[in-house]
Structure formats: structure tokens, C-alpha cells
Length: 81
Image (cartoon, rainbow, N blue to C red; front, side, top):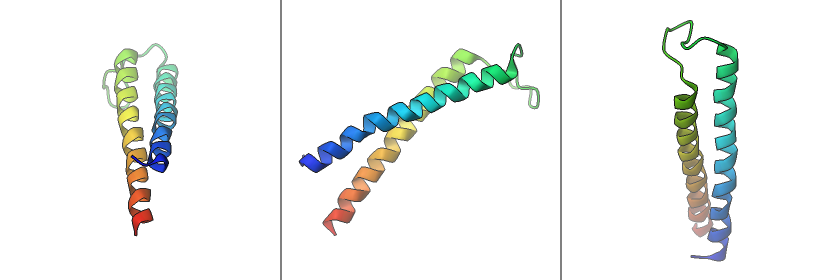
């Protein structure tokens, strides 16, 4: 693996942490807005903070990593052209 690719891939961790923090903040904001309610008033869907934190965190981590990896690979392909 080239040194440039190694540097670019090292950015994956930073971006994943940013996405993870955004997901945790989003879940906490939902919890704060709903207050004592255990369901969404408009839809009646149940809300559980633990489930939301886990789901949002996993989704944000996967999505953030996927975006950075695609960006790194795109730069690598563009560099070869």
C-alpha cells in the first residue's frame, strides 16, 4: 500500500468519530424533545433511547466509513487517470 493511500485511509477514523458524535447528539436531542413520552406523538411509534443510540451509532459509523472509503478510492482512481 502506498504512503499516500495510508494517509488517506487514516482519515477514516476521524470522519467516523464525527459521524458517531452527530448520531449520539441526534438521539439525545430526540430524547430531550420527547421528554417523558415513550412514543412519537405524530405516528405513535415507540421510542427507546438505548435502541436509538445503538441503531443511530451503528448506522452513522457504517455510513461515515463508507463515504470516506469511496472518496479515497475515487481520488486514487482519478490520480491514475
